[in-house]
Length: 115
Image (cartoon, rainbow, N blue to C red; front, side, top):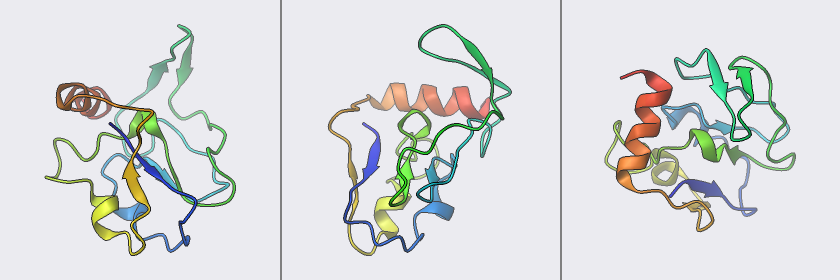
């Protein structure tokens, strides 16, 4: 499953530099698929293809957020999600709405980084 940041976030930013996929962004900041990945273009669920550098709307305007589609729980990089490991208020938690197997998380990592 992916990791999510709860609304208990104190906006300290400790998690953001720890993410190997650049899936964590400050509230209100637009994100891109290309940031922290090797992606040049992305095929969306509806079949449309977009430039990976195209800015996407923020998931949250209030606090740091994780882009679920880019989160691999640090699979292939670390033994545990680094955002959760460094969060001083334990608000980086499993997202029950986005469960993925370890194989799926590793496939996502390979897709984004070409490894």
